[in-house]
Length: 283
Image 1 (tube, rainbow, N blue to C red):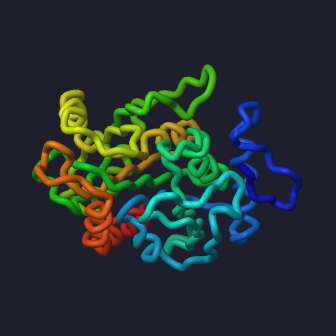
Image 2: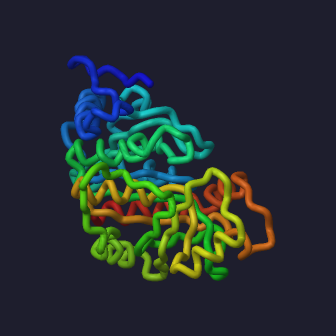
């Protein structure tokens, strides 16, 4: 799988196990600086299903480039995700946000390095804060489709990690209490929950959802946890927000579908985008 050239010589192959993935992240960051004209970004956002409209409310878009023009990135493979990287000057702050619209999921089979490459690149651009969003299934019947929920903690059921070798990272306070407090200042009604990542791409069975609840989960989905782990390793402060797009299997009698996920995102898009933009401006 080829990576975009930077004009500064060949880029190490992210899929080569002998390559240090941080080298590719630095090459990607240099390419982003070249393409956007912004030397340093302060905050990065990964916008999952339903969250894309937040980028338009953050401020002035300085540049928007195809993700495939940046080393290590691939085209978005899921309907509802955009395949671009945007640099936005955040209104009233003097800061810049890097919006990563081209999320790679573990179930795409491209390897965990590709899944977390955006996070590592964000850190290499200078970002100190990462906002991870997703659309997910909810276990709490009170969380109707369109409900945003702050991620307090997670359970990783993917049977993998983005860390390689003897790399030990403390995840005790992975999802920042400080950033959750900022979100509560914006909307005091926000609930918090534990996000459980399954590998996918199939939806969970009712028995698997029941298991997730028994081990402490409140939300189920197919992204986020691996990115959060890589973010902590890279020194980023993490805010996670899920959009409940449907009640999880067995909680509701209705069958699950990706169309339902997209519709819930569209219906809640304006409200949750305004919420997220307000939170980011206060970070």
